[in-house]
Image 1 (spheres, each protein chain N blue to C red):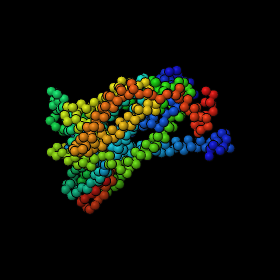
Image 2 (cartoon, one colour):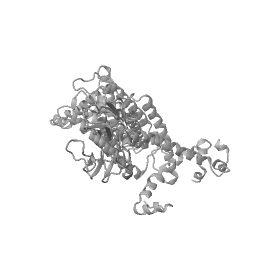
Image 3 (cartoon, each protein chain N blue to C red):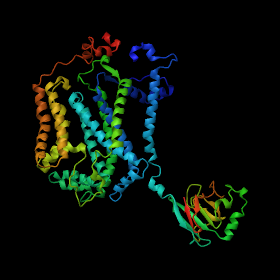
Image 4 (cartoon, each protein chain N blue to C red):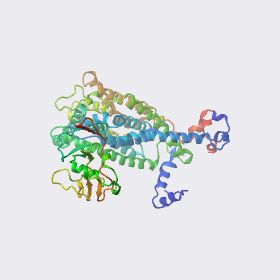
Length: 420
Length: 185
């Protein structure tokens, strides 16, 4: 990275000794970005902003929260009623978790569709899967903190997953609890970890960005950029696009916070935790439902747990399951069909996860689970061999010029680019 | 509509300021308002909450305090001293030439009724609780209160007479609801 000349002498002086301004200029200003990115590329920066919103609201909530079984529920109610703007901060944090997952799920499906996980971006993808895992752990422990019925029984069920481990399972669960059931020690450690993990996520996000900036963003065509004619400086072109996407995102976010703040929550969590009575119908938060469906699809305790974690693990090795050298689904006609089938399959799993585990739901859940794993373990490896991809454009600029004969695309491209 | 104009007229008006400049400034301004509107709840949540404010006033029955006796109450987390002063103490407090004091205040503005002095038991130097409430405690050289932290002496009206404290002991807002009951706060 060569250092840049800055007009401001103070900036110049600092930058000579601590090249922070050169770094920012290089990575956030002139950073060459493929010029054909569509709006699905907004969701990475949206996820980053969602993380910041969660950390800021979380720290302020922690100032009024008490991590003790006798006071936790009441301290949350005090936040809702007495603390200045406490209701707003809590509703932002509560719905922020849901919106964070919405954004991240779209981000992941974007990566699946456009093959963003393929070489040379395998580590970038794996760091992303790690972030997803950390997010799930953080969200789960955060949901326990209000100490309502769903908090308590969610914590009980999820920690009991580890009892499926042969031989040491029971000991691990007792170690997780710090006792013989979910109780005050559990709540205390969950609070400590819920405060810690977001900062671990920040660290992994930094690595995610370092890996991203090594080769730059993938793009809807899935072909490499070949030089300045294929890229735009990040600022102002993508900063302004990200800001526009952010305002749309915040509009939906604010609508949820102000008009339907409890839509994505469960009313039973406004009942204080009771260790002697389980709610009639216990479901996790919506973003865990597909995984919950996979857990219940396997009629074996250990098998169900393995399948659920396997659903994430399979994402880790995805770059080596899909061997096709073509990244974007635009040029993979069969893959494209199976991508949408996987998408529908995930929605079905989510729906089944919310339904009681009985009757036809069990069968559908099992079929959907089998399909999920078949997609990654059978369909993708086979497709990489048998599928005939459509011809790739020679460069990112080419499709624009091939349409430039007289259409709108020709009018949109700036005159200076025609020399190419 | 911008496309109907030439490139230069789109960018600049006769004043040399472009519409784009206006849009940029307006966008930054709206952004600043939005950021401020988001920041304010996060800052304001550290101010006292509604339940804290609800405990911000107390009522006290002072009829049980014998002459010469003092009581200490907790109000807003801080000690409040109420002293039922003897005639001797009242005279002592009122006879002082206030012009020579560091923080000149007459006793009649500090005590609504001369028999009862109500002050915050917080030294105005650095916030310690002065001695002098209990029988046998040091009362300082002016027969009021003495702060053990850095040696401030207060008189029977709670005025600073000697030592590092800059001002007199603070008189909290209070009112006599009846002859025997006062409300502090």
